[in-house]
Length: 277
Image (cartoon, rainbow, N blue to C red; front, side, top):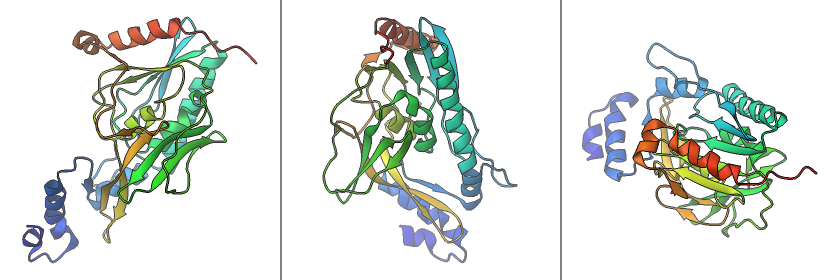
């Protein structure tokens, strides 16, 4: 089918229908083909005559009272400079909340549909403890862990054995909010809190894009994001579909947007704040 679709192609652009056909026939929902102008706009954050970059929404935060603060992350696709700004904004807002006496946090990922997970995770590093956060498992059975080291999230060298976190020294209570728009890197960010002590998930099941993509740049600048790995949390649990919350919120709560936050605040209010050193 692909050869037939590409028959007579004289330019790289004329092969795009064949590429899209292959991806569609694979039936893998996370693999994506992006044309050159759009790929450039995504990577630079700059518009062109033929493509617009994705919206650049910075993290938000607010104090909810009773020592509880809310941090909201959005999808992120953009330049390295934008990624640094995204992470710095989240870090700054979290630190400001801590200075205001906030000791319990809500991490709202319900509108984080994905992109680049590293600005997201670096932004909320202040809510995590050093060590293993998660792992990508390749089709070849190799493991590529991601971990928090020195306040920065890094990918560790590939290894042959499945890593599992040892010890769990989490002290800050964190409620993670997820929903059907929590996807891809938003799910990996959520997954980085799975298995963490003093952590509970609220909302509804995530989008189910829990596979890692490998970027393949074509000769004309087009980009294929090819699915190449599964993801595991720090306990070694592999995710083959959606992330499920510990407390599912009913339809009415989701429609109002308050039921999930209310449930998270209720749980957090019953959790003790960590003692000062």
